[in-house]
Length: 292
Image (cartoon, rainbow, N blue to C red; front, side, top):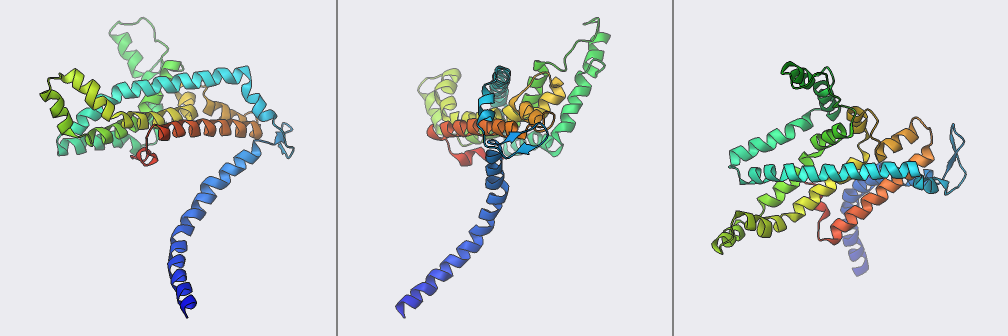
């Protein structure tokens, strides 16, 4: 009787739990785990130039050290790092003012920050192309006021790619910074002032260290996508400034070398895991990355 009753109780607890967890587990397996294992499996196969051949090889991973690819890695990290630094410099003052603002103004600023997300990023980037092109509004204005004698090349440069990256990704820096600044204990700032520290010292020794988690979180949310946002490079750089994302796209499309593209994808995933691991080791929480 006792065993039957305990079995019945366990069944009553387990069945509802399984019905709750199973759909999520199935969803994650189908949309995350299965595609990831497929890419991993594909990265160890070969190609005959037209289709994938089921022949196990490590050549795809050896090819990752190709000098041409190493240059693309260097360029990708340079653009990602510079984009991140610019987003911190521009985003921190905005996030700080947003956190200090009154409730109504704060709500308005958040809405204005989120408005660009309502429009496809490809449309917004093409808007920049129209503005910055040789016959665009900026060059036309500079010609009219006599500041230049002929249109200047703004598009299809590394600077244009950098502009596109900052424009597309800066909200991902402002939002975690806003969250960390908004949660800051104001009494600590007041105590710093009472002890004689000026605004600069208070910011450097109190505000900045206590909001470093927001900076680190925003850095991850910008640095990682920067490595793979090939469409920004295509639109703003005309494909001249290659990123890891462009390299992966080319292998799957133009070169028709899916195994090499898969190995490059695994390299990018490995880099992401390293960055996230460093973030966790430094005390960061993965939940803090889901600020949007």
